[in-house]
Image (cartoon, rainbow, N blue to C red; front, side):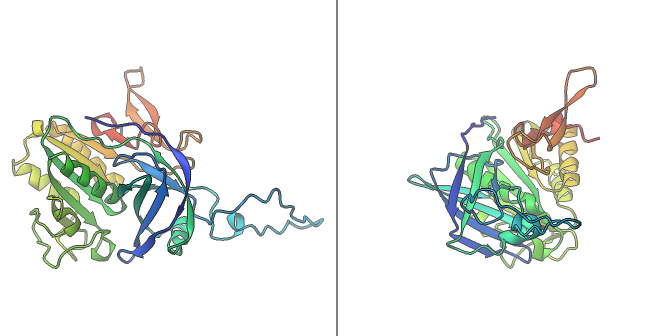
Length: 316
């Protein structure tokens, strides 16, 4: 499994586009001068507030007998102080300028603020961070299993797998049709049969299966079910297959456990709350098997991950 390390830095990026993709998801495009090479599975930390010059210490009045009146937006408004982590959905290069693609769901304070950003605004970007999925040097088959906001890094990985000549299928799931963060054709089969129903993936030779929990588009059920059905069909020999997955933890656990049971190599991009993204705050722990007396130890999702071997993860 080949993976590349990269340097990181803090960059000021002028927003090229920030467009609605579906009811809750947006696609953000950021040209970043001098951004280092990245790998699918890595992430960036975005400052979800407008960059400002440091103005020194500001003094707040604290009248006797009552609390001070704090007015800074990072304390009282919708511009959070801490950065937010986002997986890369794409990275293209033109000379010294990289264009980063980030697909996000506007659900919290930071992402709702991000949804208000327009072309021409500036954002502070820290990255690239973490490790990537890599691409197997010897196994010709690849399956991508993604759910919801876990789908974007798999789109980037699909490009790398296609470029490496791997036979690839993407299984993509969401709660309902309007929460699917990819555009589809009008012909999405109800059975878990890979087709060209996702144009972005079809253009690079990757077939797709769509699943929704409520059956509003594609297969009616969990995306993990489509994976099990297709694996049971016997067209993917275990010794030739690598599975890459990102999404809700219950989905990744089901996929990972199935792969471990069947002897299939599987790499999972774990999700945790990350305050710093660089291993300083120690908040994003993942329980990993170890040969110590306890049989496990903690690793950090941001620096040791976010991509881990499914066989190494202790879920309980």
